[in-house]
Amino acid sequence: MSKPVPLCVDLDGTLIHSDLLLESFLLLIKRNPLYLFLVPLWLLGGKARLKAEIASRVQLNGAALPYTQPLLDWLKTEKAAGRPLWLCTASDVRLAQAVADHLGIFDGVLASNGQLNLSGRNKAAELVKRFGDKGFDYCGNHRVDLPIWQQARSAIVVNAPSSLEGAAAKVAPVSLVIPPRKVGVRVITKALRVHQWAKNALIFVPVAAAHKLTDAAALTDSLLAFVAFSLCASSVYLLNDMLDLEADRQHHSKCNRPFAAGSLSLMFGLLATPALLAVALAICLLLPLQFLGVLAVYYIATLAYSFGIKKVVMVDVLALAGLYTIRIVAGAAASHIPLSFWLLIFAIFIFLSLAIVKRYAELYVMREQGKLSAKGRGYHVEDLSILQNLGTASGYISILVLGLYLNSPEVAVMYHQPKFAWGLVPIMLYWISRIWMETHRGQMHDDPLVYALKDRTSLATGALAALVLWLAV
Image 1 (cartoon, rainbow, N blue to C red):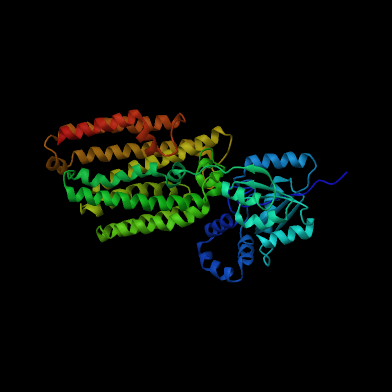
Image 2 (cartoon, rainbow, N blue to C red):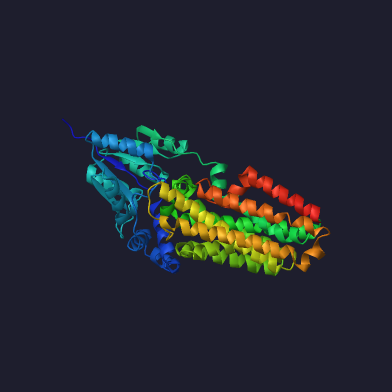
């Protein structure tokens, strides 16, 4: 009885919907951004050395990778039938071994070793040397695999376009095809978090508060600022998602984000991140210099949040409140409107309350899942009660600030019927109380501002508040 033909499996883009070089590079940069200056020096020694240098400094979690499930299921079936499986990849051997150890289905690993980059013809030569010409089947996903398929008994084409399937069929019999997942506009807009751009509407608050909604110049500047801020924010979202891959993959909802799920290439993110930022900066040329300064502060603060602040208990929610508030500062800078002390202090307290809502909602889900803490955050489920106390207190303080403002001399100057404006106090008291009631019941979206934009009661409350202000004017 003849021995089963070995089945050799590529890793990047085939077994997983990702690339371990890019994954490990992002782990390295998250550990210390200064490594960016060493990467070009390592690359001078060749791609194999680059992979080895990065792999020696990071620790890969084999369980936190987006596997191609149909292929993995088939491999397990082949393994159960007694067929030898080999993981053959251009990734560094240390990272490949971590994947093999996690899956426990491979009889051996062939990978780059710091001197030889096991890709294309190098991989083909190694497989022929080990198994003989036409002595193995090979699973791949890229045109670089064509020389390998030429030496293989049969080709298994995975996550590849139909054009590659045709090219593979010209050099070897194609025994199995696993089609790729479709990447459409919806996936890209989800990665850019276009729905989060709604938060940047805060840029228009200074114009509205100053009663300049009919000022075409102020509105135009605010609109440009909105676009620039949105593109800058998407740039940061992409970077944050790429740096947070492992934590997102273990989160109940963030695991569905395009990079975490492997439905969007990390290379897309690495190229789109600076491109979006460049366009945002170009728009800044049409706005006052102060706006560029505020945008720079926002970008730096968001990077600091991504690289470490979000892991520090309470500092993270203060930072989130600041990032919400800075949008109002940006709107004032773009439209040449002086900032109101009352508006700033109100914004800080209301946004601190909403930031704590966000953390509470995450911890609530963790508790329901039986987990004791939020990975990469620093909070524990027993913190829920204190977070609720702090959040509701901050929300109510913001309403107190609103009440004090409505009793200030400025209001008598700004409004013809200031008594109508007092209706804002009970409206806001109801809204913040309801937000916390929903949060306590576990019915809150991770982001309360996104929740408010979708919640009919919140929208009705906002419309009522607008009516009250209109009557006051």
